[in-house]
Every structure is written in structure tokens, then in C-alpha cells.
Length: 254
Image (tube, rainbow, N blue to C red):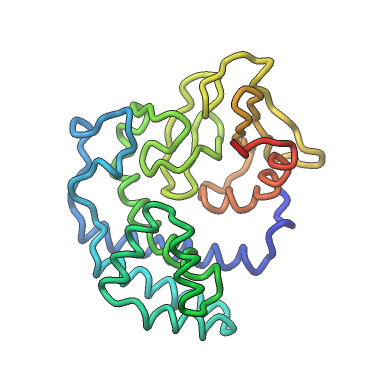
């Protein structure tokens, strides 16, 4: 893989947050003991919106936000002022709103929030999203036993993130870390099976990943080859250069 598109510093930050999220998920797992039962889930729709009960409470999410903010501050003091400003604004009402908008991946809301409070544009959504991931990861883990039974089209069966990563015979979700089997040789997004339309593209000097593109729907999946790293978020980050290549060729814009 060629991580040169992403700075060493940003990669280190993401690794730090991955470690924070693992600790957060371990705490949540002790507090939220509910199981996700396959018989209560419609297999043609993503799991999370169907749950009557989740570990996503205001106190738990507020704690995750604070832990995420403190981790980023530890990594770089230059972000401290903006992060402290974010932290002071996070009362219960705002925490609940952040939780809802992070689940919806509503970038416009967070952009407006940043502008209104004179915070660096990328901070609110980044912090909100990173703080949400331990919750999504725990739900995905509790749903793993029937993930292969799900059929929600070109999206993660747990959190509905668009399919982006494939490793061996498994799809990987970089948002919730769900894993589910590739059922057939076809485009993950539109189901196209014609080999002339769905094919692999090898990137020069790239030995560990390829692109699988579809000329029918103009979407793509990054295919990971012979890599021991199993964390999907890190794999997604370290193959960001493939996203740029695919988009330059007109894929992923539909």
C-alpha cells in the first residue's frame, strides 16, 4: 500500500483513535448486555435503524466525545483551543443532536455548527463520527452471527455505509468494522454480473490492493491483497490513494 497520500501524522492520529475506540467498546460491552436477535431483523434493511434498544445513550456518547477530544488534544496541542470550544458547547441537548446527525452522516449540520461557533470546519463532524464508532462496532459485533444472511444492496448490513472494501471472500466496513461474505461474483453496488462490465484494475507499483470497478453503475470497491492488518478503518485510510485514482477515472461519483 502507498500511504503517501495520507500524512504520517494523520495516520498516527487515526491509530490513536482506533485504540481509544477499542477501549470505549470494551466499556460499552460491559454496560450494554442486550443481544441483537436475528429473528427480529428484516434482512433486507440495515440493522441499526431497526433496533428498539441500542447502547447509544446521551451519557455514554458524551463520554465518548470527551474521550475522543482528549485523545486528539494529546496528539496535537495546536488543536486545543478549537477542541476546548467544542467541549464547552456539549450540553445534553447538543450531545443528542450530534448523536442524531452523526448517525445520519449529516455533514451540512456539522459544517454549519463549525461556522456558527468559529471552530475549524473539519473538527465537529470528525469528532462526532469518531466518537460514534465504538457504538456501531459493538452493534456490528453482536450482529456478526447473521451478517452473512443480510442483503441490503451496496451497503453495510449493519450501519448502511456504502461498500468500499473487500478482502478475500469478505466485505469489510471501515465505519462499524462489520464483516460479511461475498456471495457471488458481481458488482457489490448494482449486482451486475457481466465480466465485461465488472473487472479488476491493477495500479502500477501497488502490490497489496486493486480496484474492482463496474462500468454499469460507475462504482468501485477497493480489494485488499495479502495484508495482515485487519482493522477496516486503517485499511480504508491506507488505500485512500485508490479512491483518488478511481474518482479521477470517473468511478464513485454516482
